[in-house]
Structure formats: C-alpha cells, structure tokens
Length: 302
Image (cartoon, rainbow, N blue to C red; front, side, top):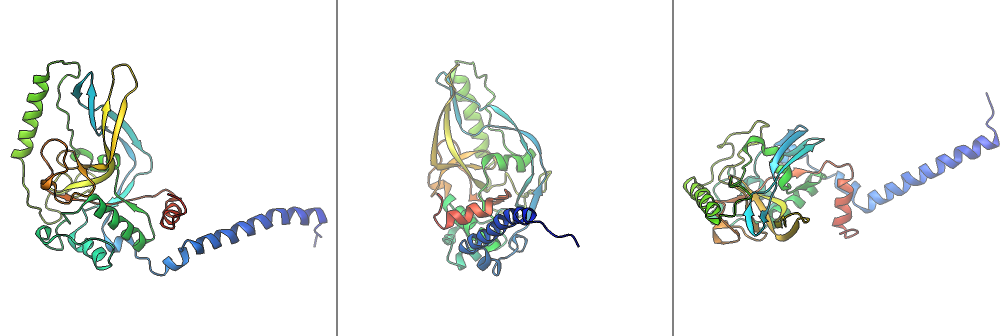
C-alpha cells in the first residue's frame, strides 16, 4: 500500500477541513432556523390543495396599470415574456373549507357569514391581507414557500382566459370623446355581464393548462401594486406605484385596497368593481426561497 506523503496529507486537510466546517455551520444554521423541528410536522401541499404544473413557455400580455400620454389615457403596452422554468400553483381558488383550516389554527381572520356558502365554494370576502396570512400559514404547513402570485405570473397561467382591458383607441388621438365613448361601452358591457353569486369550484371550467375557474365571477388578488404611468412623450416613463393598492384580476383588471374584503363597499379606483374577491397561491421554486422565508420569519432580513 502506498504511503501518503506529508504534502499530500496537508493538501487533503486543507480541503476537508473547510468542507467539514461548512457542513457543520450549515447544520447549525438549519437548526437555528427551525428546519429540523419543522420537518416532523410538514404536510404535503398536495394533501391541502390540488396543485397544477404549468409548463415553461413564452407569452404576450398587456402591461398592468393606468397609462397616460400627453395628458390622455392610453392603453398599456404589450409585453413579450418567457417563463423559463414553468409555474407550480393551485388549480382552484382557495375554497371555504381550505381557508377554514387556517382560521381553526388561529392564523387567519374568519370570513363574514354573509360570504359563506359551503366548503366547496371559493373563499370570498377575503382581503389581500387575508390572502397573505393564508400564504404564510400554507407555507408553514408544507415547509415550502407559497405566495400570492404576481400579475405577470397569473397572466401566464391564465393563458387564453386572461382579459385584455384595451380600449382600442388610437394612442395618438387627441379627441377625448372617442376615449370616453369607448370607456363607457366597455363599462356597460361589464355591468351587463355581471353574475354576482359564486358557484362551486369547477363550475366555470378550465383553460388550456388546466387552470380552473379563472375569469369567473371571483376576482383574484395579485401581489402586484397598482401604478399610474406617464409615458411622457420621448422622455423616460414615470411610474407612480401605490402599494397598499393591489391589482385584482378576473373578467377585467381592478385595483383594490389591501384591506378591502367586499369590493362593493369601495376600494376600486375606476370602473365596475369585481363581483367577489378570492385568491389562489403560487409556489416559489427558487432554490433559496425556503431559506429566505425563514430568515424573514425570524427578522434576520426584511
């Protein structure tokens, strides 16, 4: 058997020692952040909700927000985007029965009796704050990171069912009457199509990816802040984002204050309000998402 030289031994130790220290410190950090304690109580996400996988791909959607050009309201620009790794999100909107588990655990505020219809109905009468609380509870239950989706993410997952709120008026037109008439016709159609009473989950069918009940009579919260954008001619666009007001999506887009549970009581800045407010969650599949969540939960990072 060949004998190891002193130089070889020192070289081996110079590699092995840092690795062992890294493993030890990682284990210590994992213990401090609660990885080991949580592992014993984790529940699979699939046991709490039906999870849908939307494959990677490219798509085009209209940018969110209110856009102005030379003092006139204009349609938002179209954006081409590629989602490189696909999305994992809830197939259905969170139901009353699913939401009730969070309430029973003392982590979510109860839904008002006026909005309760049964365990298989989507949870409505819920605010953005309620949706965020449920996301924290669901993440803690599963050991994964679940979030209220962004406008862009839900636009991709909704596919052909995602609404285009364009008025179709020439952006160079300086005739405000044309835009007023187009806006009036759009709002009239929205009110005529109103069907306010929620239905059991699955009633409104699925899109091409299997996403259920999107663009039904339950609008969904996103984590995207409503914004007003001044395109300012040749100058750089100026954005005024109002966080605390979030975009809700459904048959049309509608900005709502984070605390609003019933859209008919106010909180919508323009146009016909949503019939009902609900939500679904998306999983953060970045490799470091779980670590970030634990660091935030413990106040180590903001």
